[in-house]
Image 1 (tube, rainbow, N blue to C red):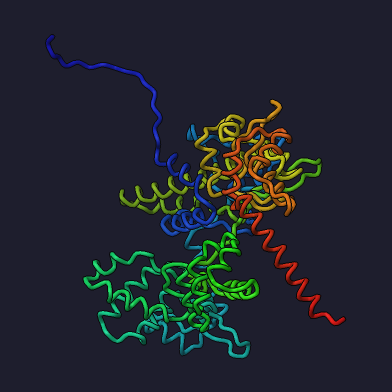
Image 2 (tube, one colour):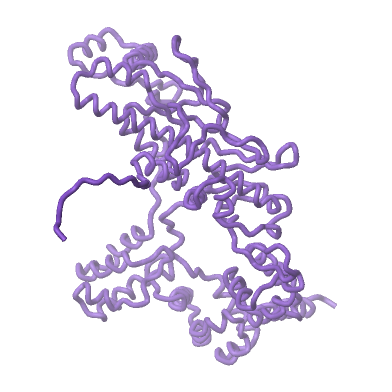
Length: 546
């Protein structure tokens, strides 16, 4: 067959991921903190993107105001959203301004930049009047006037005055150990080994159990590394730089001069102490019940994680993205948290003024790209808010029993059920529920919490959610009698009697996930607590006067 060249026309369909659609998908899966950081970066880069203020302004004369529909709240069972668009189709609601969470979204004109600068300059002249000599010096040297301070009130008029600048920085664990290292060791090679080991200490204050690679990496002997480790373990706080829990407790006991042979035997058998095997511990330590109880009490007063006193990261409070409140008609009202939604708008008037004066093609292209990016960002934020509200509303509708009666009535739910109900793709629902939180009458939960696997019903009825089954298992164990500890097989029988068809290994898996010990361990724990209570009662009876 001869090879020839020819032209052919073919018609096909393909999904094109435009940069704007990729940006919308990226914003959809960001948390409120990451979204705020992203918007701040865009505000710094884009001169046509401005931060909207909370105070409403009147529209400029000659330009009609454009009101937007309310998306701050939704009550399931009511009307659907209008003009929302869809991420899959790449369509967004029109409009240049976005301020979700308020009663109306309005197009606002900030005015030209020259007018704003003139207003600011006039205001500054009224607040800080210049003396004639200062005005002449400024005109001659073309420098800014010095800022004035009102000494009588004790407050500075400088807006940049920040009280947080006078707060001492929090000392980290590494800094605390490095300061002690500079005093304890004078040999440069030992200091280098010590600083390398300090960098290996985790937040709890522990070194890795195996330090064999440290000697090889530093080009020294294992004995030198062990010698420096011994010096580090004498630092404050006691128990720091240990390689195991037993070593950490032993260091603290040596500091208290309480590391006798009996205590050493107890430290070497912490696994028996965790199992509450008091009989074997008493034999190994060679003490009676009273001395063993005192030794266990001393261990409980020690710090198993001494490094946590020097926390390096602050705990961030979870800020909910959605609020769920009881409605006036007995339903549930779903609202977006306006505090977590950025309020930005496009300064169209500034772009119009620039387009009249710009002559270079490069400048025109730059500001055209800025206008396009700002417009798409506003629309992407608009679509993100609407999509979150739509998904949250459907979750509340599906899990109505949870909000009314509690976790025992949590229904099995997956992404496909929500996606089919709101006519979106499962990937979109997955991105919406990532890093998003909902504040309800029963606490604050991540949106992914409401998606649970299903457990079949024993009588062929409606399936049960895995979270509800875990809650039922915890209730059974919390209510068990000390003389009749429930085994996993007994829990399976009770669950099947309640209409839940579940296997024994599933019960064991759920119990271990909730960090509930086995029936043997629970029996030992409750017998130990009961024995301690009886011993305390006997001592009180002996001390009490006749």
